[in-house]
Image 1 (cartoon, rainbow, N blue to C red):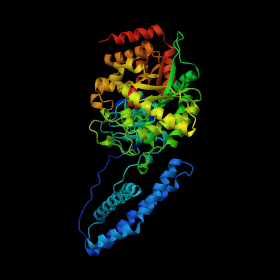
Image 2: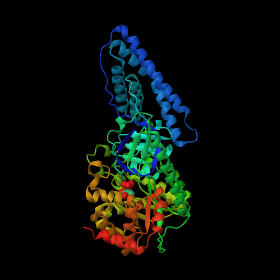
Image 3: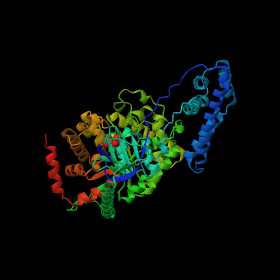
Image 4: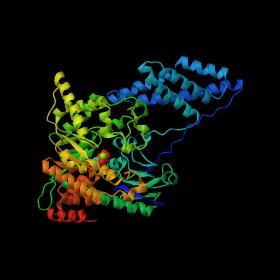
Length: 570
Ligand code: PEP
Ligand code: MG
């Protein structure tokens, strides 16, 4: 038995088998001559590797559902791969090269694949240019097979696994929506990272900062993840296992007990009402939010929809279409019926990379300060307008609000509204129904927006305070970087004053203000926010019953005294 200490990223306790994600291996192509007598052997190795990849694709094709749109796109791509693998012209070129210039097959294949891809790239034909990447991908798989490199695919993670990895990208974390993941044990990762947020939403216990975890844990070993204490126990002995089984049962009992709050409105013990909303990243989570008693959706992070598509590398070239987005937004609106649903426009960039979008963001030196969120969508109006069209088309199916992320200037709001007017005019011309009175608000998540909240209050229908980025940008502390995590302090007076100023600005212009950062779902920070006057909180789905329980045990006067202390605490 081995106990490894880390930090808590998502509370709760679970047990499961370790699924260790290997660290990425770089593909290095060897180059050596072979004798003419070895040519046949090399060709045979190539044919074998190629047929292994063909078999894998055929298997993948079998598993696709004919009813899923996404699977249909993937089917097309996998079929293209099969055609490429058997392209007689290309195979003839590889064979000829091997005979005329006898080198090991990996080297020949690598050179010929690059040549082929270059020809496609320079063809001047858009369709063929796009296929260049496909040819590199598919023969890259053959090369990996020849070199015995086993590239990891997140889809391989089974139900009930504890994922052990150096880090997970937000797009890999989409696996939480597809499998029942028991726990998460990461060497890196920040507690305000998107992976941590998703883990909390799905109730997956998670421990981060477990420095050597990928080396210390063997594939398949039994693990206990204690997300509450921030530790992972490897191969527990019988006594420990039985102690933890009892703890898990107790936790479940508390969860059951707390669910009685589901159907009761959120209020303090002296009767002040609160609205508790849910933060979601996929349409399916809307149902989970209702199950936990959410009064609506306060933040739908739409970028996760775009990232979800790229979990399969093969879908790289596919970007969410207007219809696909419309379906997702409509599903959430219909699920929530007349309850409010705030959908945030694409907040890509930073750590949320959408590889299907060929954007310059991957070359940025400091992506969190770069072309992300509203900056990105205003730079790519076609992308932005597609999303806006989908949103307005969906607006007739429920109680929609549109929210703009990472606003720093009033011009950004004005420009976004111009694009909204263009979209509305287009829909009107096309005779497509929409609700033209959808409230358009902003996220206050930069110091700029907080300090000048009075200016933004005049041109926004509502504010939602994003305390995750507000803390990050105000304190200049990367929310993902464990080296500076002690400085990431949501209770810093600078952050609290910005929140207070934003609330005052909203009140003086009589626009609604809520909080949708992680502070809104944590017991200690909720006390301060509520004392400052916040009455609408949007949080991780699983926090809703706990926050209802907390509010029911306290009075407004007590809350006000807690926040007054924090605001005066220099
Ligand atoms: C925030 O920054 O507080 C927020 C809610 O947005 P995200 O966590 O998606 O950046
Ligand atoms: Mg943010």
